[in-house]
Image (cartoon, rainbow, N blue to C red; front, side, top):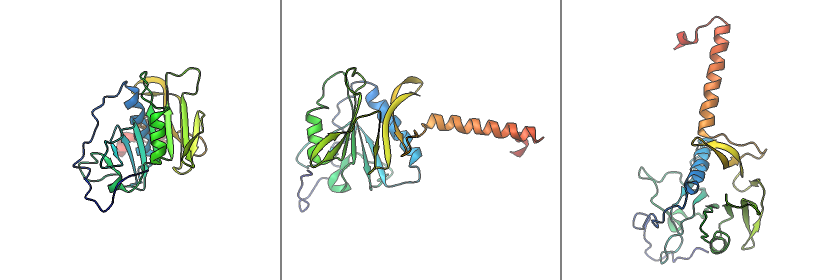
Length: 225
C-alpha cells in the first residue's frame, strides 16, 4: 500500500536520490532488462503512455528509502518527463503504480522469493516476475499475479499478461552476440517480438530481395537513388 499524506509538502523527484548506489551482481541483471526495454521500444514505438525503468528507485513513502527492482513497467504514464528524463519514479507524482516488476536473481540471495515478494505484494504491484538462470530443479521463470493481496504463481516458459497486452517468456536467442536463454515479449498468439538486431537484419534481407527482384526485371536498383 502506498503511504503518504497528499496534503503534506512532498519532495519531488529532483530532490530525491535517483539510486541506492547498489551495483548489480552480474551482467544479466542489466542485459536482460535492457533487451526487454529495447524490444518494447519497437513494439510500442507509437505509444507514449508507458515507461520501463531499469535499476531505478521507486518512491512510495516520503519517509522511507526507495525500492529498486531490476526493472519495472508502468502504463498510463508519460513515456518521457522532459529532456532530462526521469531521475526516479515517485508515486505521488506519477499517480500510477508499476503494473509489473522484474527481478533477475544473482548467485547471492537477495530475498527475491521472500522479502521482496512480500514487499511487492504489499505495495500492490499486479505482476511480479522472477528469473533465476541458476535454477536446475525448479522453474527458472516464475510469473506471479496479485490476487486478493497475495501472489499466485503462473509459471511456464511463456505467460500471457492480459492487463498489459503482452506475454513474457524465455527462449534461446542471441543478444549482444551472446547465445543463451533470454527473456522476451510475445503477442497473444505466442509470437515473439523481434529484437532491434533482428529487425535490422530482416530489413536488410528485404532490401536485398527487392534489389534482386529489380535486377531480374532489368532495373538497376542503384539508379533509383
